[in-house]
Length: 416
Length: 105
Image 1 (cartoon, each protein chain N blue to C red):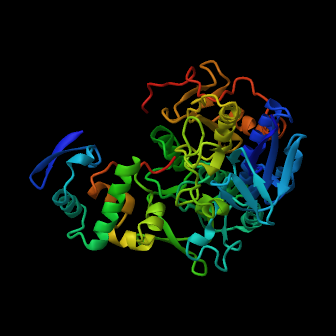
Image 2 (cartoon, rainbow over the protein chains, first blue to last red; image 1 turned 45 degrees about the vertical axis):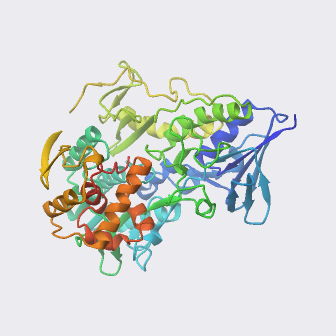
Image 3 (tube, rainbow over the protein chains, first blue to last red; image 1 turned 135 degrees about the vertical axis):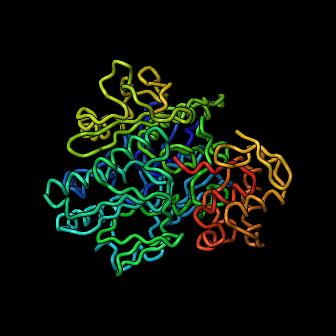
């Protein structure tokens, strides 16, 4: 039998991991693997949080995409025009056609600041920034260094966003950074969210709201930002509430990649791809799979999720090619460190069914406390970048970090 | 879960006042819930949104988010907030007799 062809759209965390894992599993005689991305810059996205505080620089967190791919994977540096589900074919912007036996959608999300009125106005990257995008994160560093007095508002426009804890981490780090600079008492810090609490999951939300309070950060809830008046320095909610700011750090709306919307039958209204929550096969067609931020799954858009999904998805692409029953193995496992400033971080670990709870990770005797600030969690977060480039992306197994959520160290009965 | 009475009909609601069985819903019930939440009269535009939410929930098992609602119902987000002040998705779901939209993660 001739080699089957696997096409992966996106060479970020998910696309790179899945291509490398499949390349290890399947010989060149069994499968050709093609990966498409529009540029050659792979950003270590957790690093973006540190850029505004001068704790990381862009040149440390950006590497060439093609260098992260194993030998025997063909990289195409082009925009995707559209996917034809009918013809099992991807059309690239230069007209190239890539027919496939299996398609993996791993193209993540696209920031959509243009969907919020006035956000990209004259104040963009002057008084209004986002650390979700490298250039703006870098510009924000300059603005924070010069910020002496006034009001800093951190706002996420609406869910879903990548790494839902990141704006909170930003607020915690801003508090730390401004104290270090000795200007904190002249600056008001406000955290405005469309959610009805600090976070989406009740137990973690209470812990995090407590931390905001301790650090003197005002929490404004159920605030749905509808408009930014850049000149006046006003963030206006759909309900008419106004928040004045001197510096606005926003997390713009997120949607799927543009080609998803150009591909009939592939995505939903926001450009996310409807995906089976356990097998990661899409609803679009049996030979189309998806992982990471590109899916519509009810779980955080985060690298850890993508990593756990990649293990299941590798297995399922192989099973699909061999016409075997798919493994319904993904349980929604997510895991992340939350920077809280002053060299500390807390950690949360959860899945579709179990919200983040206190305890220890990965077992009751494990080294990392859950939902509690510690230096070790902060060190874990810092060390993670090296793990990312050298173990996660190449598709090596990490001992003790499997795709399903461990329950051994969690206080499962906890309600406070 | 408690039982409450709308338009002379006893219905089961959860702690936040959302009907737990969409099958118990009727239009007079919707009007009462709307009144209770500061909307004295449901206009055609209100009904368009409420029906869209309800049909989508019954067909797919989940209610659309406010953004998807703005894109797909034909009622822009700004107008949604005028029709259902504070939380359009939440309030329209409540009036439509379906569970609270799960929001996000």
